[in-house]
Each structure stands twice: as C-alpha cells, then as structure tokens.
Length: 178
View 1 (cartoon, helix red, strand yellow):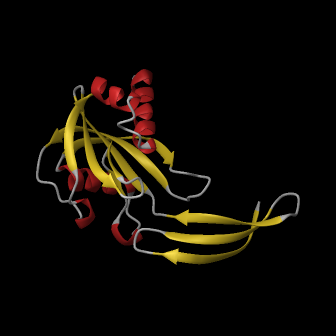
View 2: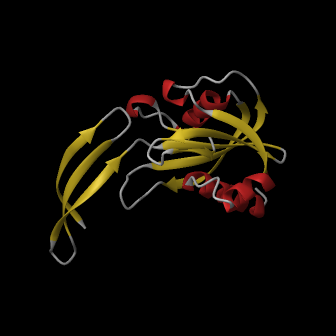
C-alpha cells in the first residue's frame, strides 16, 4: 500500500487525526484515517504477589476502569520511554521503583492508530506522594493480589487491552525465568 497524499483533519494537545490517500497493490485508490498519538509507557508495579492498579473515569466508555499506570508526555512531547515510565508511575501512584525492566512493545490499535507503547515491570517500590495531572484528579489506586487481578479480568472488571497484554508479557518473562 502506497500513501499518495496526507492531510491533518484535527489536532489537540493529545492527538491528531489525518486522512491519507492510498493506492493498493492492485492499483485501486482509497482513503485511510489514522489517529496519531505519541508513544506511551505502561508500568506494572509489582511488590511480592501484589499489583498496584489505578482506576479512573474513561470518558469514551462512560465508566470507571481499573488498569496499570500508563500514559504519554504532555503536549505530544517526545520523551525517552524509560523516563516516561518512571514519571507515569510517580505521577499516578506516588510510587518510585528501584528497578524497571522492559517487558516489551505493544501496539494500541494498529488498524487505526500509529501509537505504540512499551511495558515495564517496576520492582523495589517505595511510596511517596502522587503528582497527578489535572485530568487525573478522579484517579484512585489500590493493591491487588495476582489472583484478584486475574479474577477481575475474567469478570470484565479489567478490560484495558494494554494492561491485559502487558500482564501476558510479564507472565511470559516469568515463564522464561528472566
């Protein structure tokens, strides 16, 4: 597939939307809508058998959802992903990690978005004050055992695809003995 044109149709401090003209392999033409968002970091805070999650209202869904701390830099800034992970952990939970281990790469929705994310495991945690952004003022945090977390996934209480995929990366890492 070849891009033949591109135009931005919308932008705000968190994302932009563009419409690309395309030519397919058979020569037919069409359009492709793309949501461009900066890359994000997701952090799994792990203390023994406990996982630290955040809960917040997700406006597009119209409901509160539990997930791992995650986010992008303000104003679509390009920030080194390890630094971004430490910042998201501190901002949303107040936790600081002695060790951050890269678990792997995640694509959010590759059929419509260019956004990619990097999942991290945070260990050696110490507690401190959170530094939430204005949009995160309704956020809550709590510790859950792994068994509780897995039950929450099975019950549809945790539905964030990135959190579930990152947890799978953690399980694969542990299975490999890393």
